Length: 585
Image (cartoon, rainbow, N blue to C red):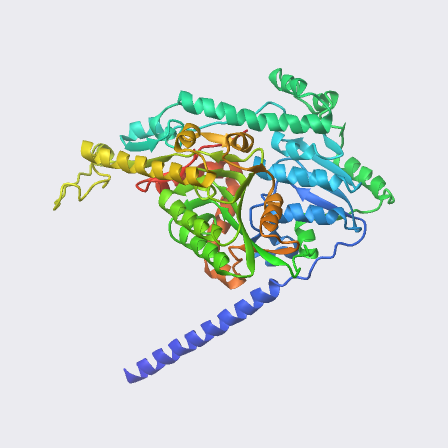
């Protein structure tokens, strides 16, 4: 027996030693692989902007990307893309911009910022070509800023107007005998409609028609400016379905030509004054990001740019959420840092937990007392997203930003009939007080309990409106008139006083610098990037899983599945969240 233990512990020790050695070797191997050679732009480069890439608010680094393609292991942020196009404008090695515009994975507000950057790049006099075998409307929104727009002769251009499709689950819940006991404040608060209705309420239909019409109007205006075709004619083309083929798009001057890929590249060679048989030095925006310094090394004051992207949740959250604990600490750190002279909060969130939103709001209020705080809104800054934005010194939004949705709701599901009639499960209980099991889910709420939940919802709604009233310096009566859970675009939000200016993230940063009286500044981004080891040992597996699933089933279907998962987050805790089935085609 003694020999057995000696052999056992010797083997165990050897296993531990080899495991530790293996871990260090693996870390060393990964670290060396993750330090790729910096790409070189070279001469006569053509910068490639692929709109099918989703440029998020912060750069997305794949810790395993180094094993596949060093140059493409990191996707730059939307802010970086805009600044890189600005850099390329004066970069003598970059001769033109090639926009791959078959599809566009970015939201309308993000696309608006990219489009403005493309228009600014054109001022350099360098060529800008856009091409897609087939081209969606959202891709065309950016592509029509190019000097020349081409589609494949057998391809086409989508031109059918916009639609917003909502999915309703009430019929399914009725069949399953699941009762979603819902409490809400605000007649336009439509986030719970899919659970309590089989079609849009008239209030929701009205607000959807307005904001969708605003997005469409912005799309038509941009096309009018770029293609010199009046918006009435453009709208008539969609109404009568006149754009069905690539030839139709050319006939009505929406594109400049029908070309194959080799013909587009042949035209680029002419612009570059190179031999027709030469190759083109294409440099992707990812490669250019790694090869280019954005000049963030000045000796001026520091501006903290804090990116709040995703659902607002209590606690830490994950890399795709705005966790109140994380952002509370980030804001506090920026407030206490004497080198930080101003804070810019970039909000791209549909909201979420009312409590988590208030935790973040509190830190913004404290920061505002000691240094300028400016908010920049992305694709969506609604409900809880607006809650955390309303108290800033200045609020910027793009024309196509979706914001507002000032309202509250709570959901308490009742599974009693489902458990009993579908699964044969019954429950019983002993309690020391009549409300000890309130909201348990296996029985309906009593009338008294329903009053409690509605009272809590109304109370949070009043607090929300108070935050807006104080932050925007408007009366409670006025705030109530524009609240009610109603969704607004950035353009209308400016008109009714929910935002101060239409502008990009860079505009917001410049304004923060002006408020802080900084002639020169450097930007520091938060939350800070995790190092390679943190990414591997942390929650990066979720991003990998999400990426693999979305690639397999398609981005639209994956977004639908994510929206279904959000229902779970809405149960129990009061929510300041906008409609979660919000899609535009």
